[in-house]
Image (cartoon, rainbow, N blue to C red; front, side, top):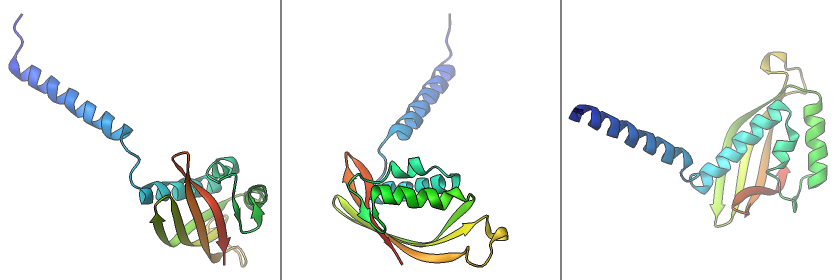
Amino acid sequence: MVIRRGVVVIAAVVVAVSLLVWFLARGPKGGPEQQIQRLIEDSIEDIEEGDVGDVMDRVSASYRGEGGSRDELRSYLRALVFRGDVDVKILSQQIAVTGEVAQVELEVVLVRGGLSGAVEGDVGARTVRLDLAREDDEWMVVGSEAD
């Protein structure tokens, strides 16, 4: 059986590209800023979908912040999403990482029912500050405050 050289080269290229894609997909999670950015994006998506439990998976057991303890934060978030349809828009954000801790400042607008359904009192911009720390190789929210 004669195998053409071109077929072997094409097969080798396909295998190499497949391995590269697989490696990049399983590769490092990015730097701290990218990891924190992903945490923020995932948390916003979870709030908009009403998944308080998933948000709380990113909050440290030692959380102390606006409103008190981790349990009090969970209650606040449940009350927020209970009425349904919360859209979260980030107007600006700053992420500052120092070793194993980070501070995030977000200017956030919460809109209930989407912009078209907004009524007075539903729309408000707030500045939210988050304190994060590395716990078991993951970034966790350890504190927060809002203006």
